[in-house]
Image 1 (cartoon, rainbow, N blue to C red):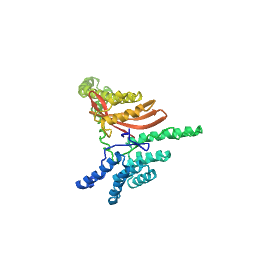
Image 2 (tube, rainbow, N blue to C red):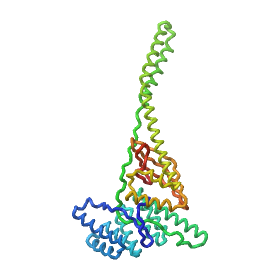
Image 3 (cartoon, rainbow, N blue to C red):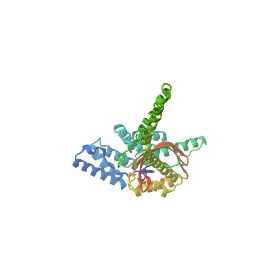
Image 4 (cartoon, helix red, strand yellow):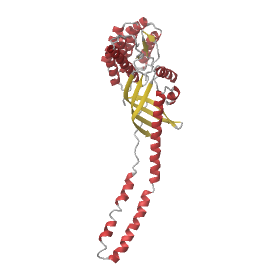
Length: 369
């Protein structure tokens, strides 16, 4: 799901994420402070709509540090907001070549291509962003919009009509190069199965040899062997009774684990049902208060509310769910089929959940894992 604030600029909505430079660890505190000041100044100019001044400050900085990715990224934003789209495309393209591990330049390149009606190029750029970071939710949302536009164009071409301006692109351009946090929550450890079958299997094998001598040896001495045959089997029930004693505890643990898995599955299906019904109260209640949406909880809820209410019809179906529970943490993996208006996207999904107040809530949401 995208995390952006709507800021109109040349028909685009720009993302407002907190910048966190990945190269900060290699800089001294003094150098990092100076870099942060320069970046902050350019960001303030962009927010105020002073694109020319922002571009000038970025060029001055890059004259001394031409490879700095953050300032090059902001320079691309400045060019796009100033309406200099070809130059902005060149700036973001160079960034993707020099820093292919960053998904944000690919995303913004896609937005600019879509603005020009080059939806095939936009799709390719977004697919590159997703390959770079399979959990990059903004690129998934934008890719869905591009697919919807491509479908609309194909339908219009079939009817031999031009509806180029009928569906306005609503793709989200990333405002800052480095998102606040990526992969903030570690995957829950896989549950370890209790080694219950081992002790139960051992006594099961022992009773079988015991009756064998009793059935073979009665012929030579029937009187002497008869007592032995009755005494030997009589001792075995004591052993089986001792081995089967722990079974109630084992069954209790199995029942508890199965119940937790059912509770997690029910929580995930309730989340999907609330989303499908556009039940925002139930939808937001499915998420933990600590859910990291890349911005404040209020801003994230506002964004999701606009996205959901902007669709006439929504259908979210889940299949092939696998649930792993480890204490108070759980991971649910499944196939999600999302339909909204003319859009139909099927993808793998992962939800990380924690136990809270007797139920399970989502703390992390990602795709393709």
